[in-house]
Amino acid sequence: DFEIEFPENPNAGRLQFYYGRFMFRDRKYDEALEALEKTNGYDLEPKDERELNFMLGYLYFKKKDYDKAKQAFGLVKDGTDDNAMTATYYYGYIAYEQGKYTEALKEFNRVKSDKRFKNTVPMYISQIYLMQGKYDDAIANAQAMISDTMQDGLALQLAEAYFLKNDFKNAALWFDKVSASGMNQHYMYEAGYSQLNANEYAEAAKTFSGITVKQDSLGQNVAYNMGIAYLNSGEKNKA
Image 1 (spheres, rainbow, N blue to C red):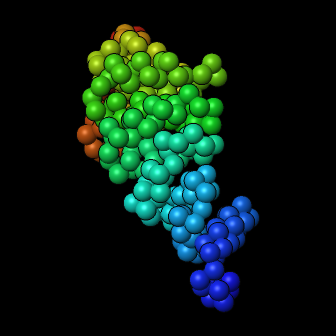
Image 2: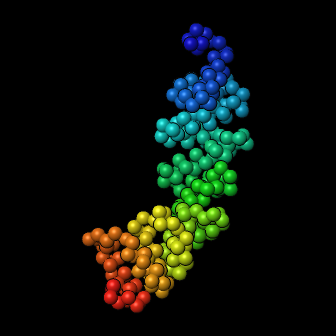
Image 3: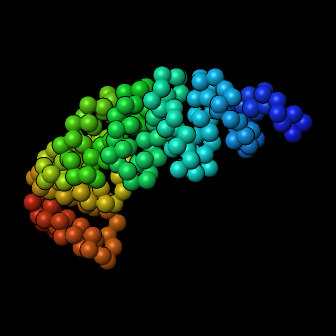
């Protein structure tokens, strides 16, 4: 071990960095973390110091040590290096997981158009707006970022935002664009309820009939609203 043999050597810190970087690139993360934690950033050039902090942030993130990861990424995210945007994404994700939604929103908005994150970050942004009760902002964000190929996640968030605004016609429109595999029982109920209130009775009856009815409040609501849908669609025998 170079550090043990030559503890006062000025190159010791840099060698730990180079070894740790080699291990990091080789995906030997435990060895990488051990070496990089021994590296003193003051021994490095500024660019290498930022790379050190990025690698440390990523390694702490993988271990779910979010406080240390966030601190490390915070030293990188506002720079101009190649890793800056990735550090910003991870910083925002950690803030989201910690429930610090305003902080997360700020970072996510910085990277939402980056090609590496444009298929995931917009959903986090809309979800934050939904949790904050900012339904119009959720709608504007999702509509601006949804792709031509359609993302179930954003379509579902659009449907949910319209549903919470009691705009059932638009809610039904967007629920119709979500694949069946993209909706759980809760969202299927909202889809059926939206269709019912948009006077799409046959569609509502079909949606409600696909929900597994249990002996709970949701099951009672499903049975009741399915009966109304059948009555209004002319299938009184099924009501």
